[in-house]
Image (cartoon, rainbow over the protein chains, first blue to last red):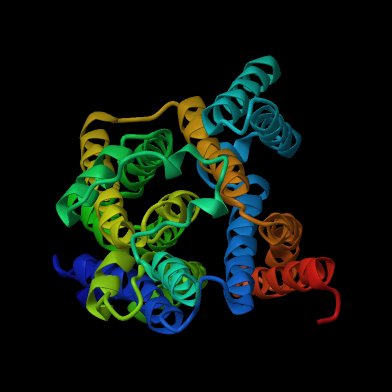
Length: 115
Length: 274
């Protein structure tokens, strides 16, 4: 196994099999399974709910259990930044750019204030 | 009398079944119904490419600039970083695989970890398919190619904007949009890998916060019904709970339990027990 992982081509096999195949297989399954759905059916609304809840789960995980440099910031600051950003987004006629810039401004202000 | 009645019925039927007739009565307030649409497939792809120059694409690019810094610190080569960006094309899965390769994970465990991080792509693709395809005309292989561009950014954009467009143009638009965003992000990831030697923590932290705040706003903006908004709220609450108590398959459970709960409650509100 060690000899394998030192071969120059091994990372590329990893990326193609454990990365590309392991990801795209879900997209292909989605195409094959979704081909029979109708846009106005109740099943379609349910599938969309499942997909939406999944992404919301990703968002919550990114905020509560972040990776890298963001993990150094206090949880309360991250939640405050996200809440302010989302509120600004709602107040300013659902403009995504306003929400993102507000969230970033709160994070950076908090970062400097807390040192 | 009888003849004219038949004629008007026929006419209204032909209007309803016309594939290009993006029913304007569904969106009376939308100015999209009045604009002039491209007429050729190439025109639709070009329109998708032009629409890709957008805030969402810029935010995604910034997130990948942050990833380029992470990949370089992890010890991935430029070729590996770019191959991963283009072929996997889903940031959470890319981050998982980068971590796995850094710790010398085997092929099978890494594939399982990445597959778990990507399960969400299946319901997302399923939800997109009825919107992009022209029943009886679109070939499955065309959808299989287009599906590679399904990731949160393009998905949210497509779910929000495609239903306003004539059906014939949706798939070429999506391919033009997805292909351009992927190519642009691919180039910018390579450039930032080469240019950014070491990223200050505050810059990296700000780049990492972009993604969740951007997803939060755009997912809400793409919601078409109360069901979508309810699903978003249940997902936000259940995601961390399942992560703590059922790690591994947590996202799948969040989607199934949260999404089904939101669907059932809002369905009851819409139509009672029927």
